[in-house]
Length: 328
Length: 282
Image (cartoon, rainbow over all chains, first blue to last red; front, side, top):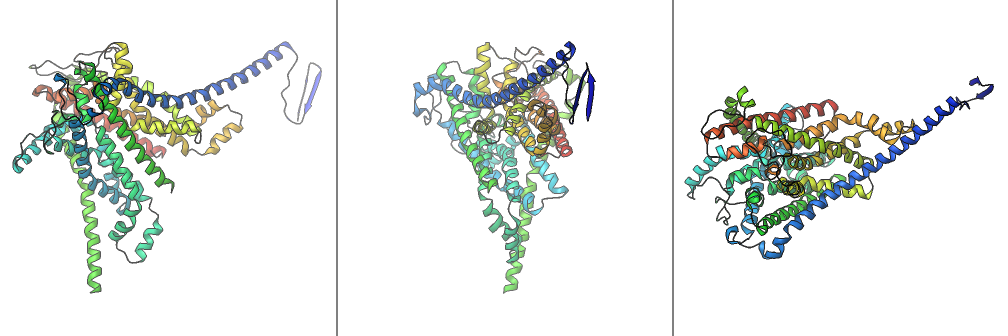
């Protein structure tokens, strides 16, 4: 109950109502209050609009990246056409541009890295997902693997240059190929270390999502632990593991610094996996600031465009698979 | 016969377990080698003089990495200044509009952005900033790094806010709070731990990035505080001096590697501690 007597007017109500007095000060106060709530509403709608604009900005950013790459690589697309992609010679001095050495170098180094790293990342995934999900030792392993992803790529490159390249060189003298040390094999080794965490952490979470009734049923039928993993866990997580490989591949294709430092940087077509070469990313890193002719620069940007499109497609397929897997 | 068979199967299972464990722990070996080698090679190079002086020309011993340290800090500071507000706001947008079509496309774009190779971002920053402004500048490097930070911040903000109970927001709305005050006074303070760890993670990620800086910040052998001019940064200095043929410069790069590694690892550990304290999943 709220009763008040002001200016000879008695106000009574069940609810505590706000009374607007007709005195000048009261009016001013009430007006101010109304103004404030209007301001709140206006700020609210401005804020909502800002959020939507931010969402739009992301889309514009990605479209802008795509457009910039396309527009800047137009001169080379016009001048060189599609055969640019499988032209076998790259000689900017004589104005001959062919991207095949770099495409080949990228594919070779990435797939070799994937091949080397897959058993390890699968082992980490199985170990952490199935054998020992909890405890201090698995925690240590998990953190260590995450640390692999955290180390900057220049540091991998520097280490590779100082430690790995001499080792590879000795290996090459033993098996009888030209002992250069730097080359596709060295960069694949470095890449293999760098991409372990991506497939491993994804595989781990996928393996942990395998419903336990499935596994228990297999145990109930008398399967051993390995048999459960091989015939229940791995088939169930097949698509998730594939997505992990795709994400690792996307990482390996776009990796620049570590590869640039150990791959040897020649624009010749690599004869074998020990030969020096160049990847798309490393040739951009090396020659972008030196490109003096418009077609030269634009040919490099076209490489960037190819790299962008390939990684986008790979990543989107990977994400789609993961989404489908987690929604099931 | 049957007994033999089952024994064989059990033994095989054990063997598989041992092999898996061995392969899993084999991953740690190169990491330990790398960390050990770098710390061994670089820790002796670090002293006070190393941190406060700039690199000497070839042939003179001594010199330090002050220009790269200052450059890294400035470039990262401006990158965060750009990326943190945009990232957090976009993250809020995505968590508030889960079903709208624009949000779907926005999420897709964030996914794409996360996978873009860093060298491509460098090219983009070159054409968006370096060319129009007429020269290499630290600012363009900051923008390139900011683009790389965005997806990490957006993702972590969105995931953190999604985990908050909706009753929290509803209670605030029921009290008559306007939307922006609900976000700033209720939602963000509760989710600050997860958002902060996302920000730190993104800083840790870009600290080691060299590729986007090659054509933007460009590098500079002298100390510079002007963000409209070329500037050196730690990873760039390591790249330049590691590939040089001079031992003095290589030693400089080893020292810089230790500093960079310590910086990145500390940020990562710090992030881990925050995530543990606030119990957020990233």
